[in-house]
Length: 234
Image 1 (spheres, rainbow, N blue to C red):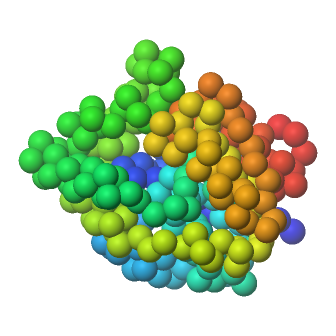
Image 2 (tube, rainbow, N blue to C red):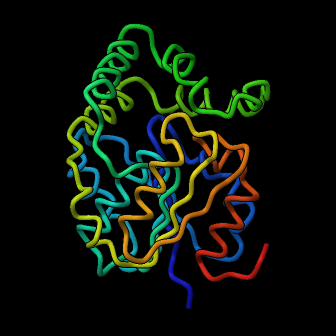
C-alpha cells in the first residue's frame, strides 16, 4: 500500500504551489499540503508539521519547504519513507542573503505583500514565463494570501536556519533532488551539491524552468514525482 505524500510549500506560497501537480497525480496517491503558518523558528515549524503529519509518509518540499524537509528527515527519519527536494539548497544563507531577508521583512511591514511579490517576481520565474499573466497572477495571489504577518514569521524562521550540510550523510532514505535549469534563487549547482552529499539520491533537471517548478512545469514535475514514487508513467 502506498504511503501518503506530504508537500511542504515555500516562502510566501500556499497550496496553490502544488495544485497543478496534484491535478496530474492526485487520483493515484493520498496527498496532504502542509500549512506552516504561525511559528517563527524552524524548530517550531518542524514540530508543527510532525504533529499533524501521518505516522509514515513520503515527503516533498520546494525551496523553504525543502529546507524543512531536510530538517524533518534528520529529526524523524523513521517516519519518512522517501524524500523529494525541489528547487532548494543545503548550504546556509550568505551574509548578503540574510541581509536581503531583513530587507524583505521591512518591505512587507512597510508596503505589504504586493510590493514583496513585485520585488521577487523576476527571480522566481523563468524569464519567458514573466509574460504569462495567469502564472504571474497565481504567484502574486499566493503572496497576498500569505499576508505580511505570516511572511515576516517565515522569514524570521529562515533566519534561525542552522547549517546542516555537515549532516547530509545522515539523510539515507531514497531522495530525488529536482532543479530548474534557469533557477536564479537556487541555481542547479545547489541541487547538484545536495545530490553529491546525500548517499541515496538522484538528480532531475527540468529544462526552461525557474524557481517555482511545480507551477512552471507541472507535467514534468508530476512525472518526476511519479517516477520517484514508483508509479507508472502519467
